[in-house]
Image 1 (cartoon, rainbow, N blue to C red):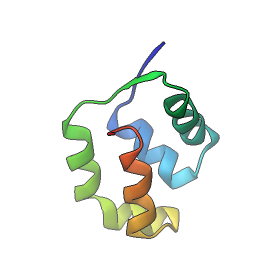
Image 2: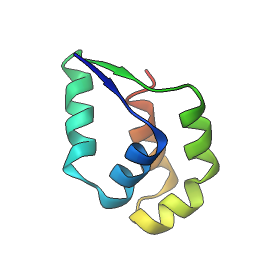
Image 3: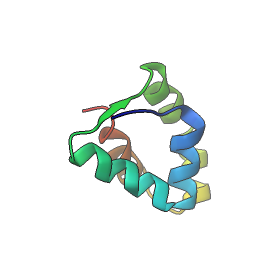
Image 4: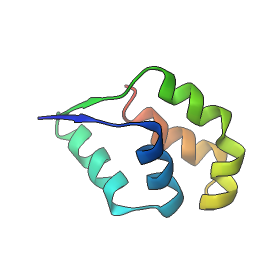
Length: 71
């Protein structure tokens, strides 16, 4: 199964700490194929301060979450 993620899905998943985000991580760890456009990581990292404020997560937690689909 293939799953395509865009910037909005990842950011809203982080901010809301939604179950969808954790399901995506679970899918990834079960060897499902997750497709993410290359520009998404840079776009999210450029907004990391705003995401951190909105989510209550620190930068290292957000970067950890971002690394999952980009391995």
